[in-house]
Image (cartoon, rainbow, N blue to C red; front, side, top):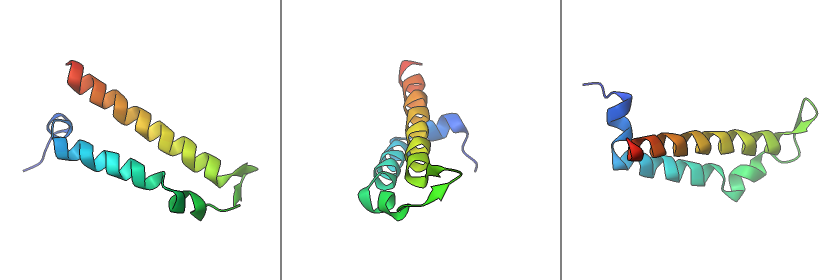
Length: 69
């Protein structure tokens, strides 16, 4: 049986999973993996942190919509 997005966002375990995933991705070893790599003139760690920040912002938006609706 397939879950819809609304059903998935309504499960507390899903939000705990997203929190742990975000925490893991912003942990020091994950940040250190980028090292001193450069991609098109920008440090990879900067791109990585910006992408994770964007993902966390979208997750918080979805959480707010779920709680206020």
